[in-house]
Amino acid sequence: MHELALMEGIIAAVQERAAAHNITRITKIKIVVGKLTMALPESLSFAFDVLVADDDLWKDAKLEIEEKDVECRCRACGRCFGGLPLGVFSCPECGAASVEIIHGRELLVDYFEGESLDGEKDRAQDRCSAS
Ligand SMILES: [Zn+2]
Image 1 (cartoon, rainbow, N blue to C red):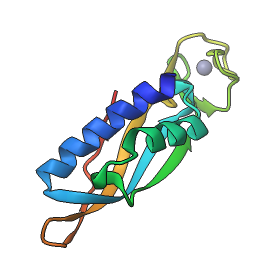
Image 2: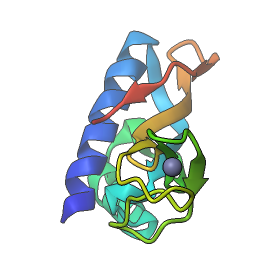
Image 3: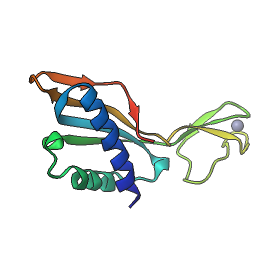
């Protein structure tokens, strides 16, 4: 399962950050998933539950997933556009096939929240990419 491997990467990245911030309990994690990753939020959420089961660090963690639509920019005319059917990458304005994907391929941790050893709340906002 594609999502299991992706989620493994995310969890590993967050665990590393958590250790650096002395966080012993993660309470919330928000990830951003571009639609081009083809990862289904339900499957990611399922993979998350499976991977963190019986792990004290993640016991109370809530997972939030934001899906990011595909957004492209035409290299020929500079127009930005989104909402193309998957796999179609040509400019609706001028028809050029040279388009740059701005959003939709990302898979990253937006932020996570947790509590550190001394009970202090911590929030790591620096983004860590799992890809
Ligand atoms: Zn164009």
